[in-house]
Amino acid sequence: MIGLKKVLLSADGDISVFAVPDEVADHLEKYCMEFCCDWLPKSPDAEKYRVQLDGMVGMCYNEKDFIEYLNGYIFDQKSALIATFTGIYSKNELPEEYIQLPYFAF
Image 1 (cartoon, rainbow, N blue to C red):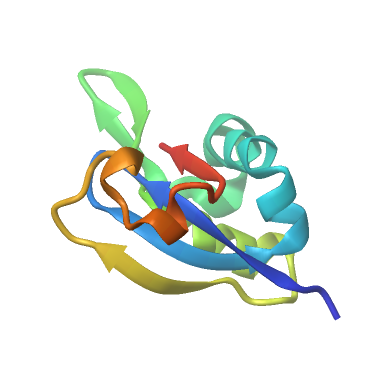
Image 2 (tube, one colour):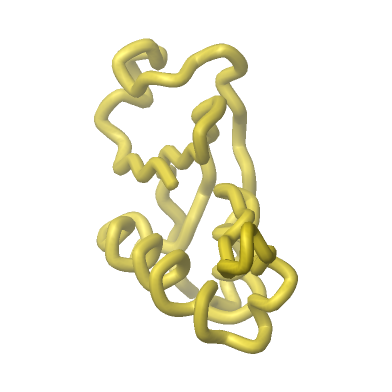
């Protein structure tokens, strides 16, 4: 069984803590970049995230969509939301126990 580690994710808003498979936590940037730069623009399964903006295709997604991607397409071990820090937009404002966690802002 794959273990779970905590990571911090945000998308132009509050920072949230998620439990994700060890592999994702250990290579967070790689998985986040594959999601937003490869899967979102290319996969037929990501069509719901594509929007037309002035004749161009844009992407509309957040950190919860990344977790949905991990759970639905990448790992059998389910990732989950642990907590959201409302009104905290900088990693430096987090409680001490969370500051050292891997962090990615979409």
